[in-house]
Length: 94
Image 1: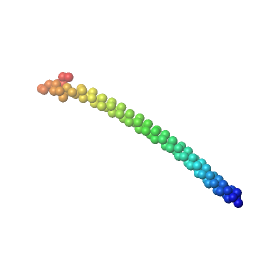
Image 2: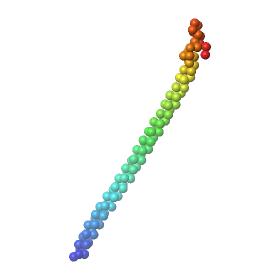
Image 3: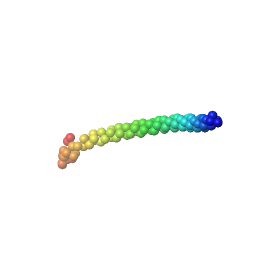
Image 4: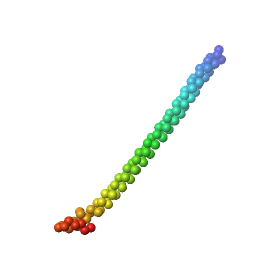
């Protein structure tokens, strides 16, 4: 009789172990699927950030060029600000 009880207990443990293995396998598949989705998302976000970075650098370079041109114009007009304009004739002598 103890042998029969022992067999029943072993079968119950075996069934629970099978459920545990099946759950583990299902969880692993889900993690693998999520990992792949996250990898794709990461690549998309990285690509978008690289585009934004390029646009920002292009904008910054363009802005710096405009600032450099403005500084050059401002330096050519600095004589006006320093008072080197002849008062009577309006002649610029820089």
